[in-house]
Length: 162
Image 1 (cartoon, rainbow, N blue to C red):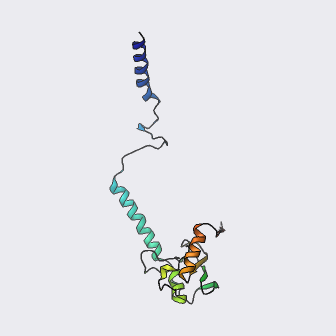
Image 2: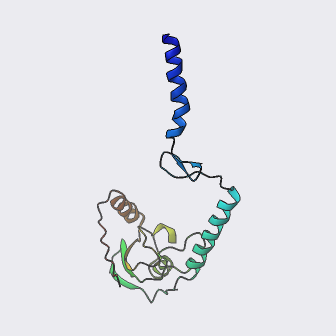
Image 3: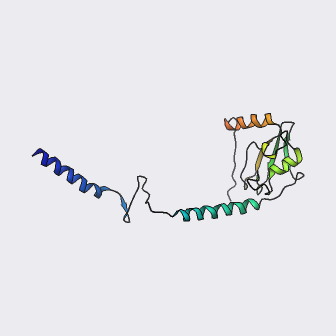
């Protein structure tokens, strides 16, 4: 009798368990409540490629700065602090031909390492204006990177909402 009763309870639980499974428009939901569907890899790749092309086009539209256009806020033998205008890339990215603030600072001040990429302490987005710190020496680069990494340097952002 106990065996029959246990078998009946298990059968009822199994058959009714699917009645409690979340369903939306006939598609089973995941734990997070998002409907799952098959997505073709080609579709994902095509969207990713389109996004990358948009970003490359935007980077190429960066305003060119010459070394004479720089607004230097502070300078010593170790670092240079420059006011970055909106619409200018901080660094050129993979395509070194894009105009950037980094190139203008390197052209004007140079660096101990002789490499433009060894000056960048931090970055600001292309559409963001503000102060950017560049290192002129390897020791300054290591020291400043450590300060930014350990959050000893605080950043303050202000937004103008129109």
